[in-house]
Amino acid sequence: EDKVVQSPLSLVVHEGDTVTLNCSYEVTNFRSLLWYKQEKKAPTFLFMLTSSGIEKKSGRLSSILDKKELFSILNITATQTGDSAVYLCAVEAPPNTGNQFYFGTGTSLTVIP
Amino acid sequence: DTEVTQTPKHLVMGMTNKKSLKCEQHMGHRAMYWYKQKAKKPPELMFVYSYEKLSINESVPSRFSPECPNSSLLNLHLHALQPEDSALYLCASSQELGGAGTGELFFGEGSRLTVL
Image 1: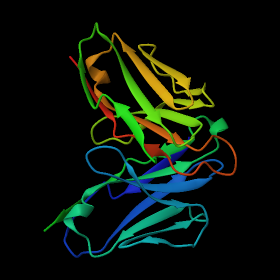
Image 2: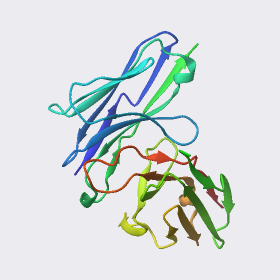
Image 3: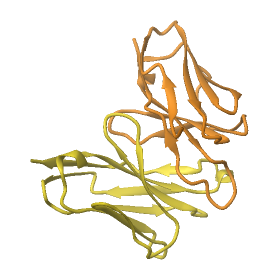
């Protein structure tokens, strides 16, 4: 059965710390991996990764994909209280496999002032 | 316009009521989705429409009835719901199903449903 596993499930850090969130997957016919940030409402898009070893960067956030080892990491440097959220990883598979986007359970990040 | 708009934002209904959730996007996306999300859980896929046709139904009970009147609109009709159906219902859209990759899902703000 296809699945996406995120770790840790939750994390509490102090402002200024650097955090690394993990996402591993077992999905048939992988197409892409997406990271989302969810605060109180809808998930907001962060990154889409399709190729191994190419880092995507946006400000203090960066992400990279390893298609051989089947995982991705999301790094956040110099964390701020506004980074507190649930971070979701989703893997896209072809639609004829039934689901198309498989979501992990998320990592809940709390940044303490 | 890069938004997915959902209404209502909050809905409280009794188990005998009939209500509808609405979703609209004007990005020209041809795939639209309904997800259900319970507290502290990831979104669970309910339905996918591709080119206004239902392409995926994840074994959702018949008390949830989706409808796609046109390429910009997606409705979810609710009837005889149970308290355990209380959740955040998220609508999303993407460029299309199939091809080399769909790209990102664009999510609406969600409709928070409470069933009494």
